[in-house]
Image (tube, rainbow, N blue to C red; front, side):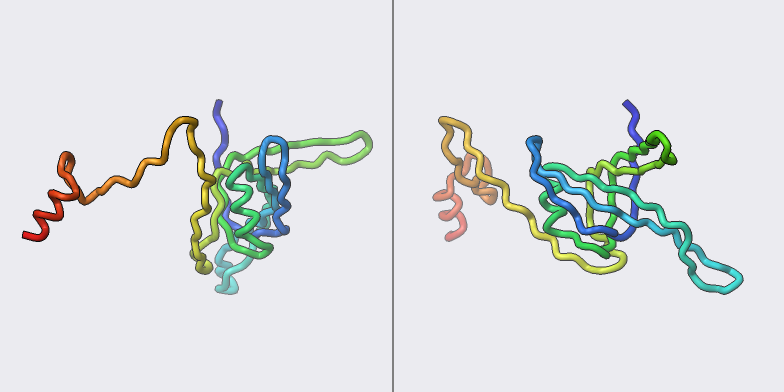
Length: 153
């Protein structure tokens, strides 16, 4: 199945709305992406047409987005483009452009951001015990006692 993947750069236009659904977390917000061009007559940058997208994020991405972005934040969104047209009897047809997000982040060309890794819940498999972190400084087959003795001499 061919899907149209896009990368949109713009500003968060509406406060993200977070919902906890039966299938997991979901968040949506509107993204405003405005083209800018150099007006050679005025010799200045000018705003062009603004495209609005409804961005949808699910599961862990939704949880992270809800705690990370706000209205006005410059963001980069990568995901699957879905264009829908719908019309009702007696009313004009409308078109909606949605992005099913795969990745969302702050646009670091326009500011700074501080990344914090989220904590994953501890998952244990029945009957298994937690394994200690291996001593990466120890060569395979060499014991920690042998390594200390080598280091002392």
